[in-house]
Length: 147
Length: 69
Image 1 (cartoon, rainbow over the protein chains, first blue to last red):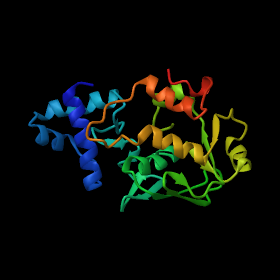
Image 2: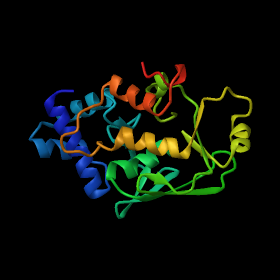
Image 3: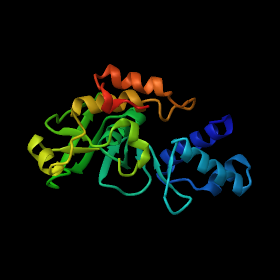
Image 4: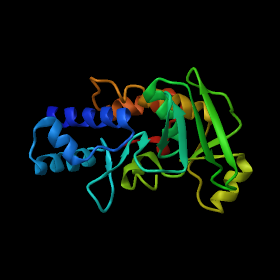
């Protein structure tokens, strides 16, 4: 990842946290004075570097991990705002990234019953649940949406 | 990467599939903080594979399943 891509990546995260909206290639082009096609190329490079996740069928950001830029089954209240994340791990990670306490709301993957975990001082308050990862670590990025 | 109400719920969800790895909520919370606390830092740099593997190792997440590369 070269210095410009790093700056673009940091801008995308900063803008997302400020606005709650996924920045578009036009936003990056305007911020850095780039032609549109160069901003688009940067989005692809950042996707390939696992610095963000693009939608499969559009040049739009789906994930700025741990945040989900689209609605998901994982909702996190943290830092005075409501966010979506991508999975159980990322839900705790939203609190970590924001350096904030928070509340995670989702459901048991088996029965669908609602579950909630509060995070206080980097620790979960409710500790009865189990966390399960189906995909081995080496394969996480083979299909990150499934993972 | 999911949460389950209990081992019974996890086993029912697996429905005979090979399980992956299971940890406590405390462990995944600690993992999340170790892996992602710098994610919004203005001077963020990508973690190396070695750094991330060390995070897993330090939490006892070892063995073939947790090998990143």
